[in-house]
Amino acid sequence: AKAEGRRTYRYFMPEMDVKAKARHELATELKRAVTEHDFRLHFQPLVDLNSGTIAGCEALLRWQHPVRGFVSPAEFIPLAEDIGLIEDLGEWVLDQACRVAVGWPASMTVAVNVSPIQFRRATFPLKVAAALARTGLAAHRLELEITEALLLQDNESTLAILNQLRDLGVKIALDDFGTGYSSLSYLHRFPIDKIKIDKSFVDTLTEEAGSATIVRAIVQIAAAGNKTTLAEGVETAAQRDLLRHLGCQQMQGYLFSPALPEDALARLIGNTDAE
Ligand code: C2E
Ligand code: CA
Ligand code: CA
Ligand code: CA
Image (cartoon, rainbow, N blue to C red; front, side):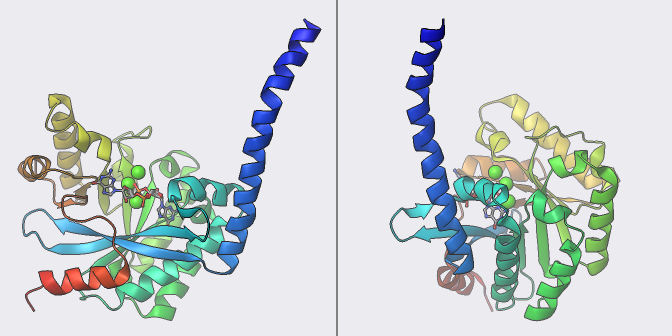
């Protein structure tokens, strides 16, 4: 048994070593990238389903690594959270997103993803207020995207922070709705302005009747609480048409546009607006 244990040990260690080493290297580079602001924001339009106009954009973080090329936020955000970089990174995103949005038509909002770690800091509302003051963006044009998990843990402090943010005048959106341990009853307890219906429901919308039923239920509950609904990851005209039919108000997805660099987005806004 001992020999076997050893063999297992020998078989698995090198692989773990390689993974740990790769992670360590990525962490070192991420640290440097944060210090040197080696990131870009791309902006994906949020589209009004009835009018077809751009209601706002979601800021999505991009790391253009000199050697690795494009590193996905799905890969580096969890790492940034683990190694204590997410607050600095999140602050940069917030500032940059507000700075860019100031140049858009006043009807447009900017949505910023907020990590739970960033959100839980008692100083978070102050950081948001500071970013608004620094950039001159009107508070109602900033939408903060949080996830369901935040509502389940530590209710009291989450509610206190949400109320402070609401007092500032910023909007709150619940991201990836339906993927967590969502209890619909939570929706009324928290000051939330928008529900972003997760892409997984949209993907199966035109094939599985169950998805349409769920989306319809979410839309109805949201409407009862005066909340806006947005469907994520809309890729086909059939999905868009059904979502409109179900009463969903906004959509986001490759059907309309992927996330774009600042200048490409400015051209898109210029071409879409009649002004
Ligand atoms: P998310 O907040 O759910 O963002 C939506 C993701 O879906 C984006 O991926 C977007 O590019 C992608 N997407 C949009 N439309 C479509 C579509 O029609 N089809 C498909 N297949 N995908 C679509 P991205 O940019 O790779 O971001 C991944 C995740 O990383 C985000 O998911 C968000 O959780 C996180 N993230 C991105 N930027 C930030 C940030 O600044 N701060 C934090 N804390 N997290 C961020
Ligand atoms: Ca998001
Ligand atoms: Ca999402
Ligand atoms: Ca997602």
